[in-house]
Length: 151
Image (tube, rainbow, N blue to C red; front, side, top):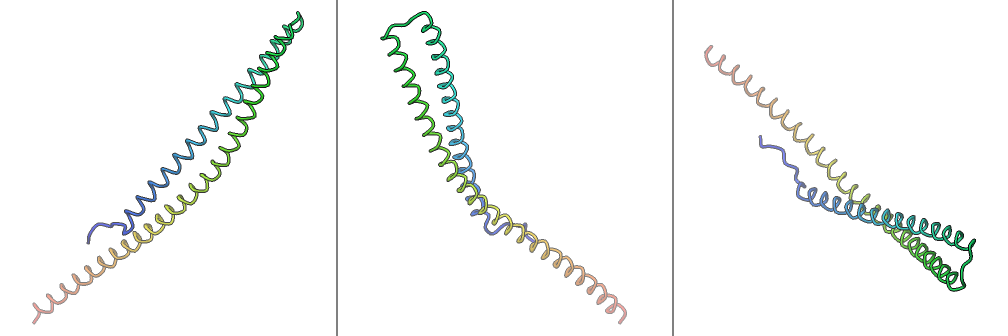
């Protein structure tokens, strides 16, 4: 009997490629979010550092111009942090949508794998039946030869 070959093997391969693509896309989006979170933490650290530096300078005395520069810098850092937060929220939404795609692609692949398993079981059952038929035919031929020789 010929070797087992899954009838939907090409489709399964294609669906596996789609699943890999979707997983890679999810990983890329997740990496972007992690990068933005790192950037946000850096901006917060810079905000804390500049506030501490300004406090030290303010003890000695600062001019109005230096105070305005500091306030502008802190304001720009605050805006940057807010922008990063919005980008993180958007990426989180994209991650959720992409995760749904990955789940759907995984279900497609899993259903094809289950179908392949069923076909393989059917193939093995057919192999067993073929072996049983061969054995029955072999035994029958031996019995016929003994009867033929006996005559």
